[in-house]
Image (cartoon, rainbow, N blue to C red; front, side, top):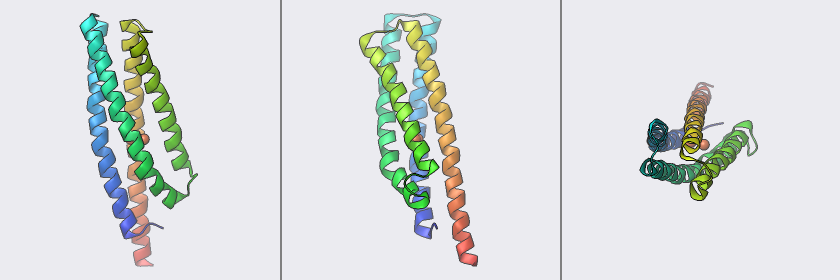
Length: 157
Ligand SMILES: [Fe+2]
Ligand SMILES: [Fe+2]
């Protein structure tokens, strides 16, 4: 059962995750804008700008996934058990996110895609990561509510 310190810990991690999601959303906005610009009228400069935005997203996201795995995952393990559905979902999502992002970053390095195709793939990546973050934030809000509820129930019993 969650005690007061665990509830506080969940809130702190939630605040940190939401802050980093803000940074990632700005990076995603830059990728989306870069992709739209390439699709509107491709140029070498616009393609380079889009590639730079994808790389910045990669750096922000990679650090974020590591942070969640080192801080949120142990907490979920303590609350639900190490192989709970929530812990498994987090690891599976991160595996998919890394794979998706690495495949796009790889293509920027090898020039394997023409600019329009790269922009189209980047747009899908942005949509997918925005949806993942929304889902994750709902999960975190549920975790905060459950923990506060468990604390309240313990106080009245
Ligand atoms: Fe995550
Ligand atoms: Fe996240």
